[in-house]
Image 1: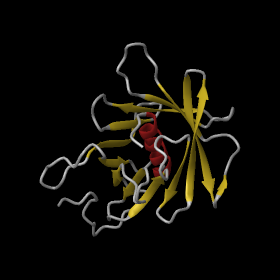
Image 2: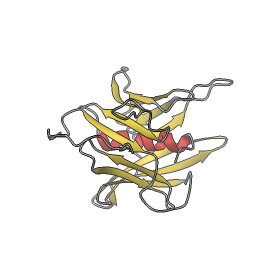
Image 3: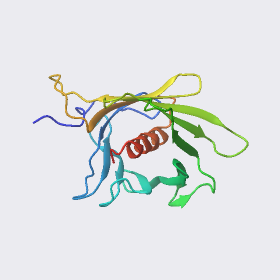
Image 4: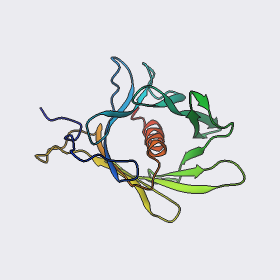
Length: 196
């Protein structure tokens, strides 16, 4: 049976280096909904558990020890809604305003699966990211406003080249990207597309 996490590496990978994760769109909690993320050493790095609620309106991204990193809240505005991400530090919400908002790009009769990310939802700092999804594929890219790739997810393959399934992704996060923010955006994208 193929393992879903990468082989343990002899090199230690710091947060200032490019990191490869395995995203498994399954919860480690029995009868739970969510996802589990393994680092390149095969250890749990992040997790999301919805506890029997698929496509919940409020989801929490946690680190491997269960500390909250982000709360992700769905706001419904008329027909179209958005997701807001609030950063947590030491089990407390860091800011009253969300750190980011994610909206699906809406074009009539389009198969565009991309999303617009507004980063820094306060009036002083605004930055834009884009999540580019591909129709019918388990892959996506996260880019900044200049088009520079921050992270890229593709369907994971075993060392023999066999695809492990639509629910197992290989995620490469560049060294200059915030890994927890990338995971929060991947989680929101999964929620928008009904994968969590």
